[in-house]
Image (cartoon, rainbow, N blue to C red; front, side, top):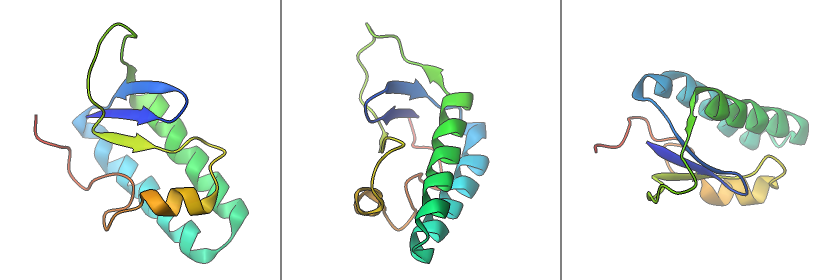
Length: 97
Protein backbone atom coordinates (compact mmCIF):
# COMPACT_ATOMS: atom_id res chain seq x y z
CA UNK A 1 0.00 0.00 0.00
CA UNK A 2 1.22 3.48 -0.84
CA UNK A 3 0.66 6.02 1.92
CA UNK A 4 1.13 9.76 1.63
CA UNK A 5 1.77 11.74 4.78
CA UNK A 6 0.63 15.28 4.05
CA UNK A 7 3.62 17.55 3.59
CA UNK A 8 6.17 14.70 3.61
CA UNK A 9 5.78 12.43 0.63
CA UNK A 10 4.90 8.79 0.03
CA UNK A 11 6.01 5.51 1.58
CA UNK A 12 5.31 1.91 0.59
CA UNK A 13 3.86 -0.10 3.51
CA UNK A 14 4.27 -3.89 3.66
CA UNK A 15 1.13 -5.97 4.29
CA UNK A 16 2.60 -7.44 7.47
CA UNK A 17 2.61 -3.96 9.04
CA UNK A 18 -1.19 -3.71 9.04
CA UNK A 19 -1.91 -5.34 12.44
CA UNK A 20 0.27 -2.84 14.32
CA UNK A 21 -0.94 0.09 12.20
CA UNK A 22 -4.54 -0.90 12.90
CA UNK A 23 -3.82 -1.13 16.62
CA UNK A 24 -2.34 2.39 16.57
CA UNK A 25 -5.26 3.58 14.43
CA UNK A 26 -7.67 2.24 17.08
CA UNK A 27 -5.73 4.16 19.75
CA UNK A 28 -6.04 7.30 17.66
CA UNK A 29 -9.79 6.82 17.26
CA UNK A 30 -10.20 6.32 21.01
CA UNK A 31 -8.11 9.41 21.67
CA UNK A 32 -10.30 11.48 19.36
CA UNK A 33 -13.45 10.21 21.07
CA UNK A 34 -11.98 11.04 24.49
CA UNK A 35 -11.64 14.71 23.60
CA UNK A 36 -8.21 14.74 25.25
CA UNK A 37 -5.97 16.78 22.94
CA UNK A 38 -2.71 15.56 24.50
CA UNK A 39 -3.79 11.94 24.09
CA UNK A 40 -4.89 12.64 20.50
CA UNK A 41 -1.59 14.32 19.62
CA UNK A 42 0.48 11.48 21.13
CA UNK A 43 -1.59 8.84 19.30
CA UNK A 44 -1.24 10.64 15.97
CA UNK A 45 2.53 10.98 16.40
CA UNK A 46 2.82 7.25 17.29
CA UNK A 47 0.86 6.26 14.17
CA UNK A 48 2.91 8.49 11.88
CA UNK A 49 6.16 7.32 13.46
CA UNK A 50 5.21 3.70 12.84
CA UNK A 51 4.32 4.46 9.20
CA UNK A 52 7.71 6.13 8.72
CA UNK A 53 9.47 3.23 10.48
CA UNK A 54 7.91 0.37 8.52
CA UNK A 55 7.53 2.27 5.25
CA UNK A 56 9.99 2.47 2.42
CA UNK A 57 10.14 5.93 0.82
CA UNK A 58 8.83 6.11 -2.72
CA UNK A 59 11.45 7.69 -4.96
CA UNK A 60 10.72 11.24 -6.08
CA UNK A 61 10.89 10.18 -9.73
CA UNK A 62 8.40 7.30 -9.25
CA UNK A 63 4.81 8.34 -10.04
CA UNK A 64 2.29 6.23 -8.13
CA UNK A 65 -1.15 6.98 -6.74
CA UNK A 66 -1.53 7.02 -2.98
CA UNK A 67 -3.91 4.42 -1.53
CA UNK A 68 -4.20 6.43 1.64
CA UNK A 69 -3.45 9.97 2.81
CA UNK A 70 -2.54 10.58 6.43
CA UNK A 71 -2.56 13.98 8.10
CA UNK A 72 0.58 15.79 9.19
CA UNK A 73 1.60 15.53 12.84
CA UNK A 74 0.40 19.05 13.69
CA UNK A 75 -3.09 18.51 12.23
CA UNK A 76 -6.04 19.65 14.33
CA UNK A 77 -8.35 16.99 15.69
CA UNK A 78 -11.15 18.26 13.42
CA UNK A 79 -8.95 17.77 10.34
CA UNK A 80 -8.15 14.21 11.39
CA UNK A 81 -11.78 13.47 12.25
CA UNK A 82 -12.77 14.54 8.73
CA UNK A 83 -10.44 11.86 7.29
CA UNK A 84 -11.84 9.01 9.43
CA UNK A 85 -13.90 6.26 7.87
CA UNK A 86 -15.71 3.40 9.60
CA UNK A 87 -12.30 1.65 9.65
CA UNK A 88 -10.42 4.67 10.99
CA UNK A 89 -7.54 6.11 8.97
CA UNK A 90 -5.98 2.76 8.12
CA UNK A 91 -8.04 0.09 6.30
CA UNK A 92 -8.44 -3.19 8.15
CA UNK A 93 -6.89 -5.11 5.26
CA UNK A 94 -4.27 -4.10 2.72
CA UNK A 95 -5.76 -3.02 -0.61
CA UNK A 96 -5.58 -5.60 -3.39
CA UNK A 97 -3.01 -4.79 -6.05
